[in-house]
Image 1 (cartoon, rainbow, N blue to C red):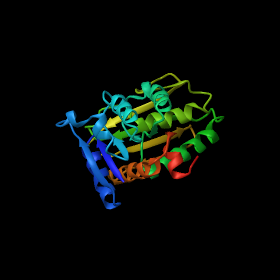
Image 2 (image 1 turned 30 degrees about the vertical axis):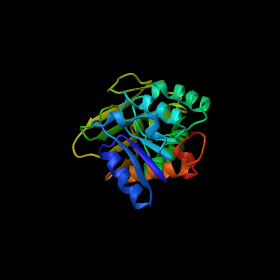
Image 3 (image 1 turned 135 degrees about the vertical axis):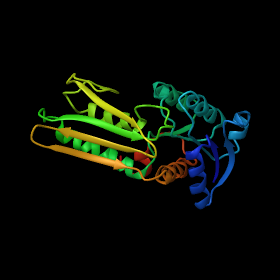
Length: 239
């Protein structure tokens, strides 16, 4: 399979290593130094594009892939205010999109555990729930996309929380997400349910980027020759 890497930072390099190990070929690498190569014509040379850039460029990059009729796997965060627009564009152009806030297999299982625990705790008003996420200092967005996904899963079933906030809050209806930026820290997410009698916690800690990179490549292998909008739940058969 021929892969275009749109975004070639530390994550892009880790994805390249995994892709080559699995017998794929990299036909395009877009970095901050060769953005002129990020064209529809060049993207067309790939069977699948893997896009890991930033909040300001992700939406445009994804739409270029739709124009090129190249399926795109995106792990960029901070742009989801335009996600529904991207879905409409994908469907209108007959494209393929697989977006995930986190491609780690472990994290996607963690999402399922979080949903199950959230349902179990939804009626237990004596427990307050909060989220803490820790990443390296170079991470541009806060809270992390993974933390937002976790928060939205909780909000979907918890009648006592109305919204998530990225700060400490004394308002009972706020779901707190506390973001910490510490080096070195590939990523830790902690969900805590606290009461006067006990605490319940679930934690996921990444040790390196290889789990994220493998998930992205698995996503690309899944998306090859498909059309439509998918998630990692589809890739891993969790939905």
